[in-house]
Amino acid sequence: MNKNKNKTKKKETNLRILLDTDPEVKAAFKRLSEQGQKEMLEISDEIRVPNLLSDTIFKAIFDPDVKDSLLSDFISCILGRKVKVLHSLKNEGQRHSSHSKNIVLDIVVQFEDGSIANVEIQRSGIKLSSKRAACYSADLVTRQYAITQGQAKSEINYDIIQPVYTIIIFEKSPRAFKETKKYKHFFQQKSDTGVELELLQYYAYICLDVFKEEKPRIGEKIDTWLEFLTIQDTDKMETFLKKNKSFQNVYERVILMSKDREGLMNMITDMLANEDIAGSINRTNESIIKRQKREIKEQKEALKKQAATLKKKEAALKEKEAAHRLEIQEKDALICELQQQLAAKKSD
Image 1 (cartoon, rainbow, N blue to C red):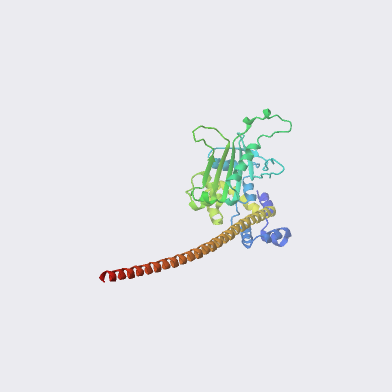
Image 2: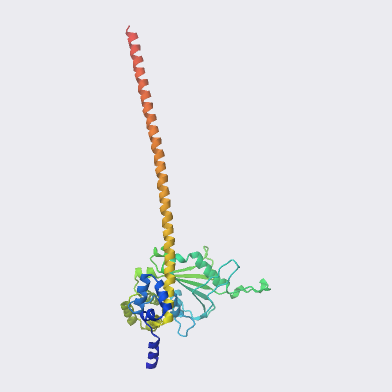
C-alpha cells in the first residue's frame, strides 16, 4: 500500500510548479481570463472543488469502459429504473450527405436490453435547443440500421431498432425550465386518443441550477448525485463525503486528476472552451442588445415624427375651429343687426 501511495505522490504536480517549469502549461494558463486563472490555482491548491461538469472530469467519472463505471447507477437514478451499461458506442453519428455535418455526442452507451442512451453535459442551455436535442435522438435511432450499397430495402429489419434515451444535464438551464421550479423533466411521445405505441424516443432533462435554487431535502439517490455534482466549496464537499462514503473514491479520483499534468492541461482546455462559449454568448447578447437599442431608437424617432405630425394637425384643427367660431360670430352679429333693422321698420 505504501509503495502505491509513493507512486501516486510522484505523479502529483502542483499547477504553480508547472507554471514555472512547463512552457506549454504556462502558455495555456495565460490564455485564461483572470477569474479562470484564479479558479485553476484554487483547484490545484485544493481550496476549490474542481468543476465536476467539465468534459474531462465528467467523462472520467462516468467512463463506461472502466471496470467500476458509475454510469449505470447514475442513468438508473435519472430514468427511475435499473439499467446496466454494456459498453460505449462511437460518439460520432452518421453523415447523411456531403453537405451535412457530423453529429458529435458526449457519452453514448448501449444497455443490456439493446437500448441506447446519450448523456449530454451543457454548461449553458442557450447552446442546446429542443430541435438540436431531437437531432441527437434521431441520430441514435438511425445509427441502428444502415443501408449498404446493393442492399434491398426489403432486407432492412426495423424490428431490431431499440428505444433511445437522450439525457441532457444543464448547468444553466433555459428560462422555460427555470419557470417550472422543477429540476427533473421527462418527455415521451403520447397519443391524444389513448392509443399506446412505443415510438422509441425519450428525453430526460436535469437542471442543476434549479436543483441548487430549490434545495430539495435529499432523499432519492438522484438528488444525492446532483448534490455531489454541484458542490464547489471544499468544506461542503468534506461534509458531504462524511455522509456519503460511497462517493469518497470518486472524489479522490477527481483530486488525482487535478494534480496530474495531463489532467490539469485538459481542465485548462475545458475552461478555455467554456470561456470561449461564454464569450460567444456574451457577444450574441451584446449584439441582441445593440439591435434592440437601435430598434428602440428608431421607434422613438418614429414616435417623435408621429407626435410632430399630430401636433401640426392639432394646430391646423384649432386654427380651423377658431376660424369657424369667428365665422359663426360674424353671422350671429349680422343676424342680430338684421333683426334690429326689421324691428325698426315694424315700429315705423
